[in-house]
Image 1 (cartoon, rainbow, N blue to C red):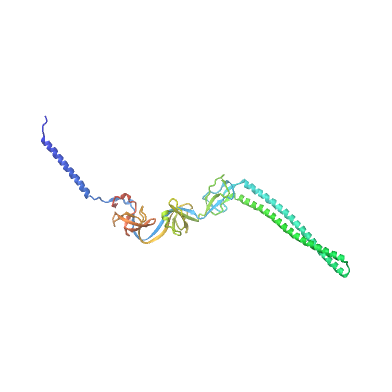
Image 2 (image 1 turned 90 degrees about the vertical axis):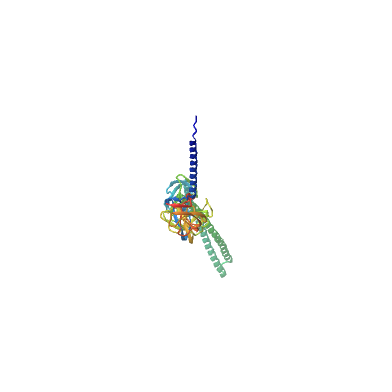
Length: 417
């Protein structure tokens, strides 16, 4: 049989009331704490922060790009004849002189053609000598005949004059005088004809000799050409410089006119720079550039701006105007800084990460003589490689955080420890 215990029920009720009141007090305390609590600034390790100071004065506006050094003077060595590569004497990267043999080619057919041409020249020489001797001998015979006929004419003319005088003195008959006169006239006519024939023979002889000379000269020219082609089987550099390209292998077949090697002047280089298409709009011919070759620095001027855009970049050629640093070689990687303008009396700061021209952003500005930084709104203007112009929000002497602050985007203030 159960026994009633009213005192225990009262105790249980009191305990429940006490716990409810305690819970309510705890809840109200948390609410009040949250309403009144103001968290302290977010702490940041100083080793993770880069700080820059805002300055006032001249800002050098530059555009940066990367590229390579290229030879300004390039000479291609081409095959003067077809052939097969027998030996390779010089590889790419070696210095060469004009008479340096790079590769040796072979062409048996060409060698045979040269021998045939030599035989043809000897034959034409002999034919020319014989033909010239015959023509000159015939011409001499014609001249001899003309001389003899002229002598006969002079003698006949003299006889006619004598007979005429004797006729006038009555010592000679008229028939004899007429016969002498007729003989002289006949010889005069024959002499005139022989003179014309001799002149024609002389002209004809000279023409035939000239033709024979031309035939001989033609065969000699062919021999000279073939000899030069045979000599060209030993492919020479032709220029002083550096052998930049040469990829031939022994046994490889080459054709007439094929490019065999490339020789460059290692002391005459130009810079070829890649500039983003947006920045390239600021460029113009003649702007000055600073070239960093990793071994030193040199300077130049923009000589050409490619009108085309490739993969978002524009190719810019820079002529080197000062001496190149030691060790500068074709195809070596370089960095370039191109001077666009000098902005006088402006406010600027070292360029923060991810900063862009003509934008409005928030940056962490450090309080004077303090390690606490607070967000402030800033308007950027023009940019350079490592600097950016401040239009609003900062003044000279202010310090801001330049490194990436995206991890602290939820914080208004930070403490740098």
